[in-house]
Length: 74
Image (cartoon, rainbow, N blue to C red; front, side):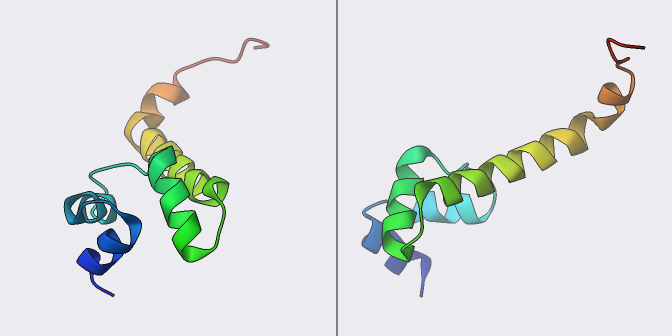
């Protein structure tokens, strides 16, 4: 399947599909609904995948800053 075929099936642009694949755009709730309908999954499945990517990326970028934070109980 090409990106254009997927885009046509979802009713979105090929640019949007390409940017999601390249990690330049996040999966929005709208995209999650479209993907879940097409691939017979749930929107939550798609959004949880995106959340996991966002959390991993955020940790990777800010890990040293987070290490400096002391726990409230310390």
